[in-house]
Structure formats: structure tokens, C-alpha cells
Length: 404
Ligand code: AN7
Image (cartoon, rainbow, N blue to C red; front, side, top):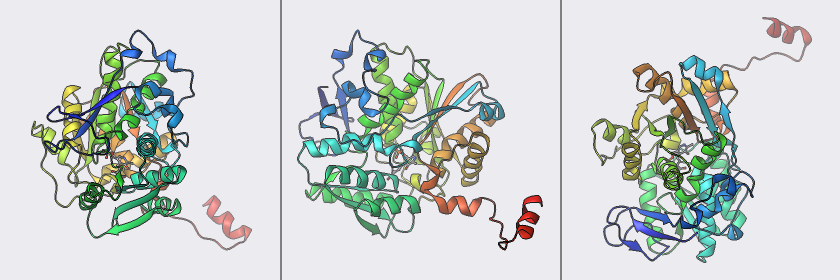
């Protein structure tokens, strides 16, 4: 449970846990866990706790006794045989993060991040968000009794997410700008000491999110998949998954790494573009646009970490159109009964495309991380689903529709 915080860029050790960037070079921060106590042990030693984020307490930078928790994690891993057959794949699993308490994977990072905020004595927490981060932070702040401020891009947050942030009592501020603009402002608020920042540049957030990787490995009984595919927005989650895998690899609990595949929307594609150009850095997209508003992000704060995760695992990044995203969303619902929001469906859309391009082969065992629940964005569903039939309240009229 001991750890150090280091700069991802210059390697400097960071003593101050309130920071979100290296005071020397401005680089991203990264928590390095001391895993020496876990050496010589096995994943089954962790089974003393139920499935969920805190089962992996020895890998987390906050003691489990101090956890602010609403029982996050422990989400299903669906074996999607019908979909695998349709896509021509040996095996396709979906890690369904929509089953988390607030309906997205963000809860894994927030249980750790908000626990840390409490430990540090912070009274107000805040974030910029495309929606899910704000919904999650608002809930955990309520649980912890902290003040909460969320900055949202005006008009571009899905209804369910906005409702959640308002419901849990956060101060909700709509910004005339996009997510990247909102993040700039909230970072300044944090630097002036008005709040503790809980966007995923907070180095403790990915520590919670890396438990997605631990759970996938546990649920597959330590059989390493060939590829793990996930949507990329602000780009911290792919890093978190990489970090989790790396930790178990270093302990010898797994003997190889899966390829990590990041999927973006064509209108918000800085990481995909950088990968295609073979670059370790990316050029921000000025006016990001996509139906998958969760990943409508042009300047991903953790982009450099994401690219490292992709290159180190011999993975790749790709992009899919809004039409492909919505088609994949429908396909997952229709074939498997699994409802996910558009950003989450980007992972499945990515697999569809990569199968067509031959960049994922028939014999691969693939896990898609579906990051958020269908009900987050009911407007998009209603706009793109079939229509509701109308009838008077009479047997005849209804029967005509039923039999028609
Ligand atoms: C459903 O809530 O950035 O690449 O502010 O909500 O780690 O950013 C959401 C991101 C994927 C991308 N899927 O993850 C926010 C926010 C869903 C998401 C992502 C998000 P990152």
C-alpha cells in the first residue's frame, strides 16, 4: 500500500498530493505502487473480499478502512457468443461498466479519488465533465459529505448524466465552450485552492480504474485475452487498464500483455490520428464533434499516457463514424440484450471495423470495455430507435397493431 507519485515526463518525485501536474515540467503525474508485499502471492489471496474495487486494496493508494464506497466494480463480463459469431471472432466478451452504482466506470476512480480527498482534508471537490465524471463525483461527494462543483459543456451533456449531477446536489455550472475549455477553467480553480480536482489527471483516479483490468483477468480465470478494446476520450482509462495489467505482469500473475486498442469518434480523433502518424504526441482537435458526447474531447489530458499504453502493448488506435457507433450500439442490444451509451458502443464499432480491415483476426479473443449505461443518453436512443405505435384504449385498435 505504500507508493510514490512521480512525473510521467521527467521522473521527478512529487511530495505534494494536492497537485495535478509536475511543478517542474508541467507533466502528467503517475502513482507508482510498491508491490513488494504482494510478491510470491497469488490473485486468489485477494478473495477475502467480494468482487469489486476494494477487493484489490493492496494495489490501491488509500487503505480500505478509509474507503468512501457505494459498492462500485464487480461488474459482469458477458460472453457474447452471438455477436462473436456475427463478427467472425473466436471469443468476444463485454465488460459491462454500465452496472456500476452511477452507471459508468468512473465510479471506480471516484471511490479512490474521493477517499483520498477526505484523507487530505479537502472540503470541496470539482471536475469538468462530458457527463459521467460529474454524475459519479456528485454521488461520491454526497456520500462523503463534501461540497461539489461540476463544469459541463453547454448543451452537450446527455440527459441522464445531467440529471444525476443535479440530483446528487452538485453545483452544476454550464460553460459556453467544450470539455477542453471547462477543464482549463477547473484546473485554475484547483490551483487557486478553491477545490480539489477530481478529473482523471488526478493521479489517484486511474488507480481505481485499473481494477477493470484486474476483474477481467479474474473473470477469465487469468487467461489473458488477445486484445482489450475501449473508447478513448480524455484518455486516462486506457492508461489505467495498462497500469493494472502491468502490475500483475510484474508480479508474474500473467505472462503476457493483451494488445490495447483505443477507439475514438472520427470527429474527435487526436489519439487515433497520432497513432496513424506513428507519433508519441498528438495534435489537439479544435472543434470536437460526435454523437458520443462522452468522448467529445479534442485535447485529451492523458493523451501521452494513452499512446504509451498503445505502443507498449503493440496495440493500436482507430476511429469510427457516428453511424458506425449507433449501428454497434443497436447490434449489441439486439444480439445480446446489453444496453450501452454511444461512447461505449465505440469499442464494439471499433472491433467491427478492425475485423473488416483484418487488423483483428478471426482467432482472437477480444474483450470490449463498455464504459456506460444505455440510460445515460435516452435522447439518442429515442431519436434512433423505431417508433412508438399509437392506439385508442380499445381491444380492436390495439389488436390491429399487435397482429399487423
Ligand atoms: C462512457 O465524464 O471524460 O478516455 O468527463 O463517459 O478515460 O476519458 C468521460 C469519458 C469512455 C472516455 N466512455 O474515457 C467525463 C469523461 C464513457 C465516458 C470515456 C468516457 P477516458
